[in-house]
Length: 117
Image (cartoon, rainbow, N blue to C red; front, side):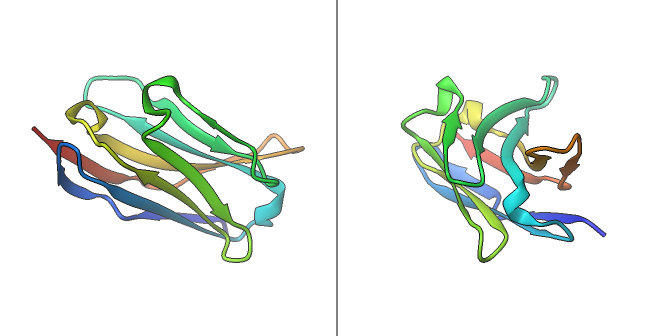
């Protein structure tokens, strides 16, 4: 049974930092591209960052230079380091695993990030 469990969310002031983690089980982690998405109240879910099994990353324009995605394949875990947080980063952050050569996708339940002004 596949499980993705996010952690590390919370309340932080503008300019602060948080590190999100997503622990995966039930999948062969190295066969999956890992993404972080977020959904703010009243808005569509959006892709924030992606990382391939070999570590190639991509970050959405509004978070480039502030957020960094990384993964530890030995621990089946993907991270999102978030620095210089802004109120507009407030959202529920979701972890997603996408099969590299399989049409499968798994989601975690999400973790709330709130940035106060």
